[in-house]
Length: 279
Image (cartoon, rainbow, N blue to C red; front, top):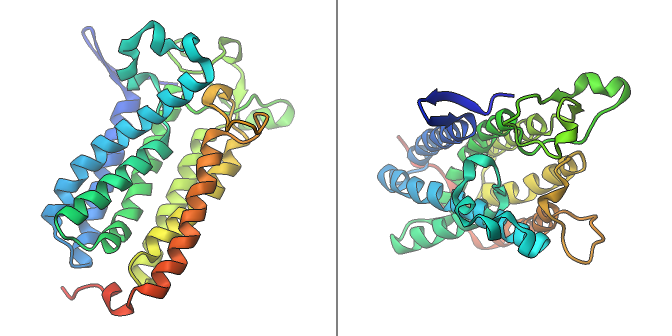
């Protein structure tokens, strides 16, 4: 598609990085607005956003590296070229890893500064998935997270990558129509963001409700889209005969946490704490 947005002399500005930045910016702006509505400290949320960005990218990269090393061992590119550990513009980010690390950082940061943790995560959730949806357009541009080859009449629906700098592999499928899984994932993330915003603004009854619904809603949608992915080297859960991908396996655990959290928060949180502060 269009991996390089602008070439400034010898410095390439990657479309993937620009879209990631746009996603983070949109997520921060939405989160600040919702934080104000729910009586949260906007300065605190703004400062937290920096750590969320940092831990999100770091966790995503760590997850990818662990999967690559576990799958390939000494054949991994990270053994041969250690500097590639930092080459995130070449793809290699697993969203679940970033989500998990960013969540842990958010909980720690909120506890340290004595902020209401689950009211905070509820306010952050819609912006989180909105940012993810926007970032997926960076995946389209880079040729990352591509789908399986389409044939017959279905080929009319496919994306065809021709840029030699695209991340599509093996190179034999360059020029062939592929499932537009990047768009599938963008639509999925927009949908999750909309549902969480709707719950937060109209139907919330207790703190943690939006967070739990997000944990339950995202994994099954992601698992379904995984069936159409074509980047088979993304890793599989051991002892599943390469049936359950890494993201599907993590998603099962995330979904279970969401179910537990929904019942726990409904039982232990008083409804009055979920009401937004008056303007």
